[in-house]
Amino acid sequence: MAKNWKKGLIAGVLSLSLVATGFAANEVLRTPDVSAKSAASHAPGQVKKQQQEQSQLDEIIKRGYIRVGMTGDYKPFTYLNPETNEYEGYDVDAMLELGKDLGVEVQFVQTSWSTMMKDLLDDKFDIAVGGVTRNTDRQKTAYVSQGYMSFGKAPLIRQEDKDKYLTIEDINKPTVRIGVNPGGTNEVFVRQHLTKANVTVVPNNLDIPHLVADGTYDVMITDTIEAITYAKADSRLYAALTDAPFTNNEKGYMIPRGDFAYASFLEMWMDEMKLQGRFAEIEKKWLE
Image (cartoon, rainbow, N blue to C red):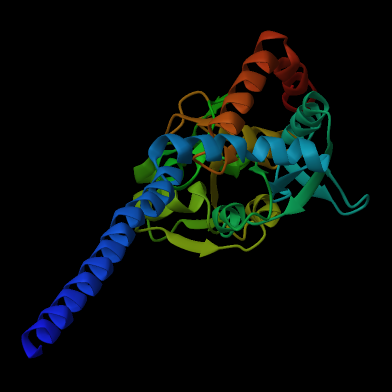
């Protein structure tokens, strides 16, 4: 009797163990299904699909306006006219054309050369324009479009000094006073190539040409296009070396990187602007 009781107890324990083991095994087998679904949603193909579905281009069209970041201090590309409180310039007109082709309104957003990249990454605007120089440093962080205008770095000087500052060596002296705007490629050039000159950072880029003209500074290093613009407006100034500048560069437009649909549209739009002569019309208005 005692033996039978013990056998029954052992059999019962074994049965419960088998049931528990089977339940646990069933749960173990089910768990990978949940993980597999989670992993599948983050697989490269799915992530790419999600990115395509979430293009900023779609968001711009959906909201009905595009936010354009510009400094407003870089003639002839962007200028915030204090009398009208309106932006004007080459890239202002170009962005109005972009708005028409997108079927949306254009909202201009104030930025600065020092904060432009951060403002773009912080989603304060959809595109940065206004004399933006294409370079690999910017391309590391954002997407910079194809070029739409060629230029180079050159000195804006006084007319009376037009034969005085013709080389880097002529300018790179402690006696030469240079005024430069902060945060952009002009300052980068000055810091790299004019280390011996007497450099002053002037917060407002619009002030520098006048300070060169009145003798406060001797040289403003800027783009050939801006130098020519100021020399035309003020007979005291001279745009030197515009036919043989210190560098060779192009202007482009800058948007957040990693958005294939948005970048593709921007590139095709620029191709069409060139092909249909619309860039040429804007250039004639602001540069000739």
